[in-house]
Amino acid sequence: MRPPRIRDLVAPTGKRVGSSPSGQSHWFVALVGLSLLGLIVTLVTTLPGAKGSNANNTRGGGARQDGDRPKASSNYRGYQFWHANQTLAARTVIETPFARAQVHTVRLESGAVVDDWLWFDEGDAVNVLARRAPRRGEAAGRYVVFEQRKYGIEGLSLAPVGGFVELGELPRRAAERELREETGLGKCGAWTELGAYRVAANRGAGVIHTFLATDCVDVTSSGARAAPAAAVAGADLEAQRPLELTKREILEALRSGRFKEVKWTATVALALLAER
Image (cartoon, rainbow, N blue to C red; front, side):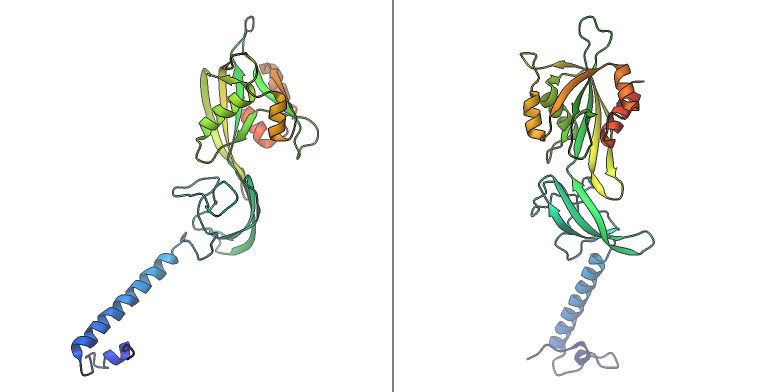
């Protein structure tokens, strides 16, 4: 026997009809309860920022927000960026453990919807401008940088210490680890956090955490670098040559554009401003 419909239960006068008023009353209460539950679910799922049915609509991101979580099914080891009230969907085009290209559906402030918004994720990274402690006879310690080649840069460029933040690792800990691995320096007299910055405002490209480390001393027992140049080059695919620059030399290198990536330039400039 089919369940009665609401119109079977309620007469035009508002009185229940049928031969079993008690049973029909129970059916009426159940149906009204289900209707209210459906209304609540509809309201919740259509609120701004609510997740849609797309399997890729998991929140997270390089610019982390409260409640962000790693995307368990993703090959990319970072977080899914999700801008509350604006991101409607995200579709992955291609990904590696270190980077991901996506197409987002984005609601603009005007209310218009763009369904082909290109977005590029890269793992959060750190850059550290390190100044070692003065050696005997030096008035001030020198800045430790690298001269190196990169796939996306023509010719040689100077660069500060840098690397990826491991999943779950604090940026400051990542900065300390990278400094030790790449230069052998540790036990710095002071660490200054210079800020965390989105690399490309509308396209993503990760977040860079910037630091200044001063009066750093070598923590290797032999005084040699913890990660020899050959080992660093093998891990990074490009050769690196460590340099030590005075304050005057690094200022001149900055002004003349020898730090050829915007993240490196910003880190060095922020660090030198912090020391003024």
